[in-house]
Structures are given as C-alpha cells and as structure tokens.
Image 1 (tube, helix red, strand yellow):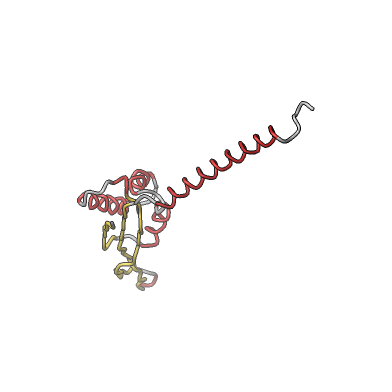
Image 2: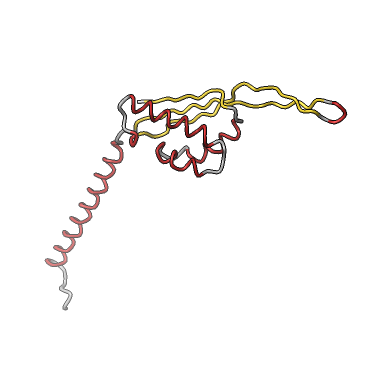
Length: 149
C-alpha cells in the first residue's frame, strides 16, 4: 500500500532540499524524523513536515508507522519569482527566487519470502554437513586403521 504526501510551493531552492534528502532516503521515516532536527540545514524543516504528514496519512489508513519505508522522495522545481537588486550606476541586477515541490511516497514493508527460503536453505546445508561428518566418523571406525596403531 502506498501513502503519499505532497507539499507544493516551498520557498526554498530544490538544490538545497536535495542535499538533505540524500541523507535520509535509506532510513525509515520514523528514524528520519528523529535525525532531521539535528542536521544543521534549514531544508530539514519542510522535509520533517512532509514526512510527518505522510505518517499521519498512514495512520488514517490504519497502517503501523513501524512498517513504513520510503518508496520515493522527489524534490521538483516549482515556479520562480523574478526579483531585482540595485546594481552599480543605477543598473538593475535580476535574480530568481526558486520554489520547490516535495513529494514523499511511503509503502508498507511486506515480509520477503526470499529471506525465509534462504534461511531454510542455510539450515538445510548445515544439517547436510553434520550428517556427512557423522558418516565419515562411522567409516573411520569400521574399515580404517585405528589411531592407536
């Protein structure tokens, strides 16, 4: 199940937001909320709000917050505000105030059958190894020379 939260028109450059996004994309959302306030970037604040909104949306759908993982975090460009600053000799120096759109998609983590079958395979190999060692010990005891000779 996918849970989405979108925040549009955040008055911050997408470049600044992406730096913080790269730090948290491999974490669980709960862990990301704990870590983001300690990152010394202003871009962490809007990300915290969007992640909290996504978790609240998951609670509305009766999904446990411990089962959630990030599927994607997108930082897209929004519109730009064109501004000017006074320059030398009465000239105008234009610049752009950039905006961002933040999109967070969470999904529920389902149990992976691959891991279960892998664990069974490892246990089976260990059992086969023990049986082989027991057979080798029996063979040495019957037909081979005794260690005391």
